[in-house]
Image 1 (cartoon, one colour):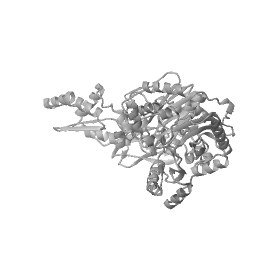
Image 2 (tube, chains in turn yellow, green):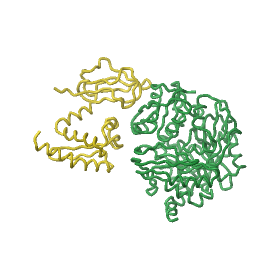
Image 3 (spheres, chains in turn purple, cyan):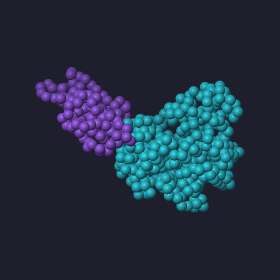
Image 4 (tube, chains in turn blue, yellow):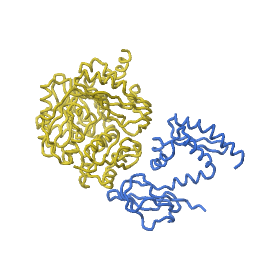
Amino acid sequence: MTADARRTIARLTTDTLPRLIERLAKSELGELEVREDGWRIRLRKPSAGVERAGAADSRAARDRPRAGASSTGAAHNDRQVMASRGPHAQQAENQRGRVTSPGVGYFVAREGVVVGFKVSSGDPLGHVDVLGVRQEVVAPINGVVASIDVEAGQAIEYGQPIARVETNVQ
Amino acid sequence: MFSKVLIANRGEIALRILRACRRLGIASVVAYSEADRDSRAVQLADEAICIGPPESRRSYLNAPALLSAALVSGCEAIHPGYGFLSEDDTFAEMTRSHGLSFIGPPPEVLERFASKAGTRTLLAKHGLPTIPGSGMLRDDSHALSEAERISYPVLIKPSAGGGGKGMRMVRSPRELQQAMTMCRSEALAAFGDDSLYLEKWLEENRHVEVQVIVDRFGNGVHVGERDCSVQRRHQKILEEAPSPALDDERREVLTDNAIRAVVAAGYENLGTLEFLLDREGNYYFIEINCRIQVEHPVTEMLSGLDLVAEQIRIAAGEPLGYGQTDVVMRGHAIEFRINAEDTAQNFQPQAGVVENYLPPGGPGVRMDSHMYSGYEVPPYYDSLLGKLVVWGPDRATAIARSLVALDELVVDGLVTNISLHRALLAHPTFLDGEFTTNLLDRVGSGAFLAASRAA
């Protein structure tokens, strides 16, 4: 990392970020993004707006620290600044690879789906049995199954993480 | 008795049901939408299950999700609370066909009392005077001829649901034709059913309702009446008991006739019969609510009964175990609905974070609320934040205690209607016990607020 980049990060974290956090906390907005010289800062709070925008993602939004002016919030966003070049795209891809339950019921895995299984976007990974009605669980992206978080036959709730699909990275 | 119950509702009533379950030694499973993840009921529940995204249609109105949640968690019964699926006979039937109990009337009783026009005819047969009204309206010309027969002014009402949605009072054929379309679309949006009927509109009426409890063996008691005349656009704001409009003799006639009629008509579980009272003291039955109501604590304060516990007991098949003479009503109680709404901006509902919440206390003061400091009010549901209920040995004491309690109540962070309640308590018409259902709309809530500020 160049000295230039370090200076920019220092300026963004000590100067720009606190102001942005304050502004976001006061505003009705759920998300705030600022671009500057190839750097990008994106803040997001787990508000109603976020849930409306993407219900399936709200659990993830909630797990993130609130964009309040707390030190943990700042540290978290600091990491986002660090990750804003290159790795940022990978992070977003990981988010998209999360598979959550479409309903309340029992999870039934598709035969042969194990960690390392290669899938294309839209491929079935199993289904949730809701009063005898199948609700399909599908791969959200192309890649391989990186983890399966529930056991076959397990009772699960809406939005519960079922699996994670990762894009093939060498 | 049940050992585990699914609570299929949210907000203050989810908490109220949870408390009743605890008292009865029943484990509770709270079904919640993603928007209610941080709710007080979820925090206190023995178990909590996320049933869907924030939209009610996909969570609290999603029958398969609720039933599945009850089954996977090993519940024996579902308590639907009020609103949502609480009076849905199809949901009650589905609940039973999955081997679960519905905490409310059985499906066939819900079905028998589902049609408002049908219920009026049924209870008229059992001796209740009813308000002149129409059957289900087929079209505009049918509405016009029925309105002519009943005579204007008439109230257009949706056949499904309540809460003032899809309701309009009209004074002429022209107003009727204009309002019909609007009422149909409002009713369709709120209840998924656009069928309407007409009811004679009484000027200067009061809204008085009788609480009843009937077990499955036909034992029934009434638990007195509640006066819900303080309304804005057919939405209740404040309720009290006993009604200042009834003397003891009239009260006895009304409540006795009400319980006798519903028992004879085969009602079961908790219910509320709504009546209109005209200036001359005549009463007319309008509809029955087959659920626990928002304003039930008023009756609990006077009777000492736990109505939610009674509801659960009866749904579990237990006999009532007491008679009318065992129900003793004492003193006077008033309930204030604390809503997140801006009275200055046409009562627009508010969402946001409750930065600071401090409930009031003292003798006779009860606060039923799901709020806590830091709680975020989601924008998807109704604006009810809680209910302040105040009891006194007489009406004057109840009012005096209410003023102290309202002053003590702190809800910071969003706009509430607390100031409207203070204004109501300062108004001579309310103090005289003379409030009628149209008063707030006729005078305008703005005028009430302005008058109290000037005073």
